Image (cartoon, rainbow, N blue to C red):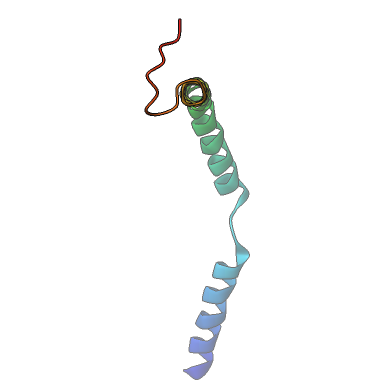
Amino acid sequence: MERGREQRRRQALSRFERGFSLPELLVVIALMGIFITFAGPAFNESFRAYKVRSAALELTDALRAARQVRCPRGSRRVSR
């Protein structure tokens, strides 16, 4: 009785320790390829939008800094 239980325990462990089969790995790799294929263009578009938004914010900051240097607070001078 004890010997049968020990044998089943070893079989269960050996199945767990074997890892993944080749077909399982190929399916996972294929699915990853499909996801990357569809996600690639969306990622590129969002990256472009981020770069445009970042450039616009940088330009806005530069214009604010230039305005502060040119027209200090409380100044009544009007630039032409």
